[in-house]
Amino acid sequence: MKVTMRDRSIKTSAWLLYTLIVLEILFMVSPFAAYYYSIYATPLNALQESRYTAWLTMYLLPHFTYSDSWLANGLVLISWPLIFFGIALFLFGFGQIYWAKITRKGAVEVGLYRHIRHPQYVALAIVGLGASFYWSRFIVVIAFVSMLSLYFFLARLEERICLEKFGASYREYLERTGMFLPRRWEGQFRSFDWRLPDVAWLRFAVFTGLYLVVLGLTIGVALVLRSHVIDSLGTDVGESRVTVFLAPIGPETESAVVKLLDEAALPGDVAYVAASSWRVPELGLTGPTSQHQGGGIDEILHPTTHGNALSLGPARLSVVFVEGAYARGDIRGAQRLTRALNVRPIEYVEIDIAANTIVARRPATESQWAGIPVPTF
View 1 (cartoon, one colour):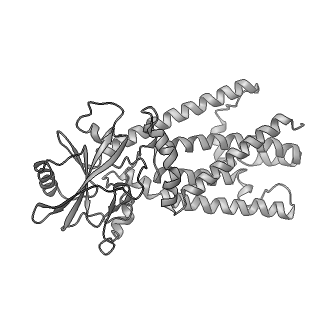
View 2 (tube, helix red, strand yellow; view 1 turned 180 degrees about the vertical axis):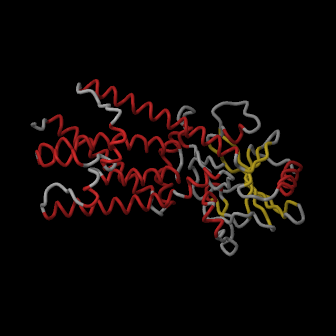
View 3 (cartoon, rainbow, N blue to C red; view 1 turned 90 degrees about the vertical axis):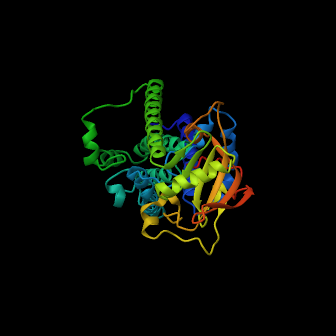
């Protein structure tokens, strides 16, 4: 079968998109978080301009907040192992295929390629899954589903090209290996005997429909998960403000803190309560270096606090009062937390727990990543 100009154009466009997505995934797992946020300030804030797109920047898993949900904690806990495993798998497959190119051995049919035809796509899908759990904004989840769809398209296109280049030997390879899973595993799905139509426009229509269905189901599951996560947080819903405790503090102390804040007639739609040693750059909390310490085994088991100690401790508390941005007015009760498209810190307060008094108040300063949408819950 002759490769047409249309095929070449599709291949060029697909590989361009592929390159951009690979760079995106590698960029997301970069440890240079400040660089990550500075780069993404522009598109994230652009999404914030419309109430129809602002929801895309929201998180659906705990972010700098303790949750008593084993599901939410577990998903964040496995995020980095998935990312590192995916990267290792990708590099291994990368080494195999480019060694074959350098040595001119033809199609790679050993190692990972002995069992599946596209291990690098599988590896990047694993990286993307881990990134979707750690940077769990809706836009990242949608990008992940879109990435998987594009990989299927690229894999089909690559196989057509390889069939033309390697002929019968590659056809035999197709028959004894799986596309993204080992042949034996994929055999469990072959009983459904479904395939895309042969007519190009109908095939595109069916593929687009399947993509939209999967995307819709994914967003629906994400919304349910987000609702579950918010229910699992330590919160107090008052008439004028929602108070969020970023780590456990005990019911009696929680009540005392809420009462103290209410009596002081402080501003804001939401108040985030953390230990004075906590660091939450999105909210402008930069606890003293001498006091900041990890939470040992608690930090490992509860990664949603991002390295801050799980307990708020017996000394002082820092409270950040924020003003929420909402798609519409008349927001009441828990909606101040659940429907905030973005938050802006407006005042910091220090509380002495033992004395049950406010010892300091100051206006909020610009946070480390000012301008980044911060739906912290």
